[in-house]
Image (cartoon, rainbow, N blue to C red; front, top):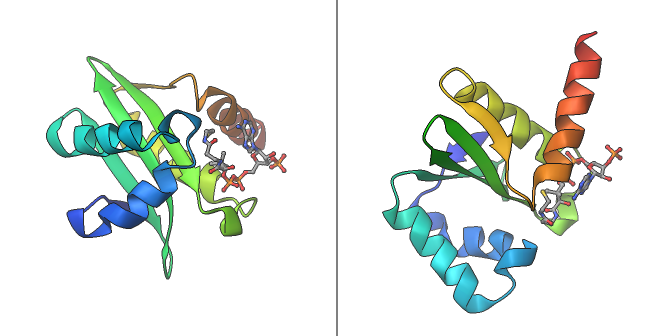
Length: 121
Ligand SMILES: CC(C)(COP(=O)(O)OP(=O)(O)OC[C@H]1O[C@@H](n2cnc3c(N)ncnc32)[C@H](O)[C@@H]1OP(=O)(O)O)[C@@H](O)C(=O)NCCC(=O)NCCS
């Protein structure tokens, strides 16, 4: 299930965020984590089963909710966690916002959207 980030999960969240291409550099990773702490328009979520297995971020820009920082523990990839996180975030935000993806997550989000729309036909 998707849970809101808490400070006690900071280390695990940073480990997961470090798989994002733009967070490979430690300084950038730290800045990203700090932004989630201080910017009320940046929301970070974690995917929790027995352990924390993924992250997904949302950045609010006016009427738009931008999906960013989608990352899954490498040992648990290709099991549908990424798709479930996108679906959950969409359901949560699409009532109030237009939901889109940033450059880094766009291809994956497009794939998820395509699959969910074809499964509804
Ligand atoms: C991208 C990522 C979050 C996917 O998580 P996951 O839990 O393995 O994804 P799912 O199991 O729900 O879906 C896997 C499917 O997505 C595809 N996929 C993986 N990365 C993708 C990408 N960047 N763009 C498009 N499709 C992608 C896989 O090929 C697979 O396709 P299939 O269903 O046709 O076999 C994971 O690979 C990851 O953490 N990557 C490192 C972080 C990263 O690069 N994030 C930016 C992209 S979101």
